[in-house]
Image 1 (spheres, rainbow, N blue to C red):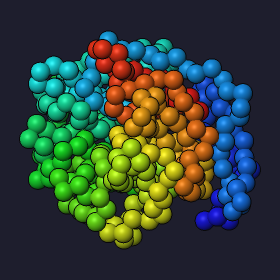
Image 2 (tube, one colour; image 1 turned 30 degrees about the horizontal axis):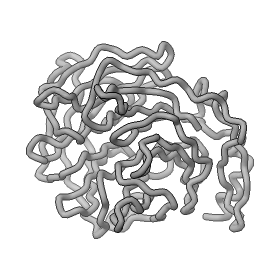
Image 3 (spheres, rainbow, N blue to C red; image 1 turned 90 degrees about the vertical axis):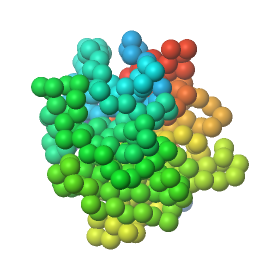
Image 4 (cartoon, helix red, strand yellow; image 1 turned 180 degrees about the vertical axis):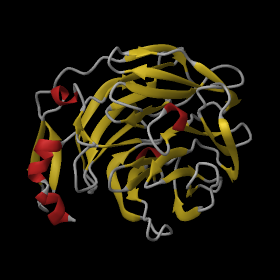
Length: 342
């Protein structure tokens, strides 16, 4: 692994922040990436000292009681989902146009969740609005998965209510022809289950790993990555852990790394676009500072190139292909979107 990472030194400068071979417009102007070697010969992404100004936050008129989910459909269009502040806490969805920095009208689903527990979004099997899946925790703590139906937008199609329960929000992503759902069990342990068709989930793994709050899934071209916080005392020293799901042996996670960063809220992961090794963008807020932080994970405990976004949230952020979304700390807790500020 170390030799493979060191060999990526030149490609990092050329290909950092690529997605399927396409450079994200505007991101390159915000990034100045360098390459350094650690004492182990590890290639590490770092941020230059002279940073570009932080991208502006785009504030919607919508308000939330949880972390909003964001998933990118194309270079211009993303979808944002959240749990509303109405009494029933209905699930909601809207589009975001990155080119015009404008939100579409909100769609309120008939399904509801709980305060502090947001939905998760994933396209499966391909990027089309009719293939947008939503996972959420119902009012009875049971986990649900449904598909957004543009022809009947307020009713999620093919809704599946699982026999699994959680006191935390689930995480959903598509990887290698399957739809994966992960959650913190009511016993505090990490769980994952998958489906080949978005309706039959029958591959559950319950790990002996205890986690503090909701886990996070993100698919890269190479691995299905997972993140969580390991419980500890005091809780403000709960370190962020990142691992890889092992398709060959799903019962055993691979490359488990406890990082040097702490959080007590769900973290966000994104693929950093660097080929050949697990370079991820991590976004989180610490237990003592409401500001959203960004950094690079390169397979070692050191999260590098850490940047303070300048934005604050009572929950945690979400990430998707250089966009991030969060609930603001303003009294109404508006839903916001901006560009990752690394």
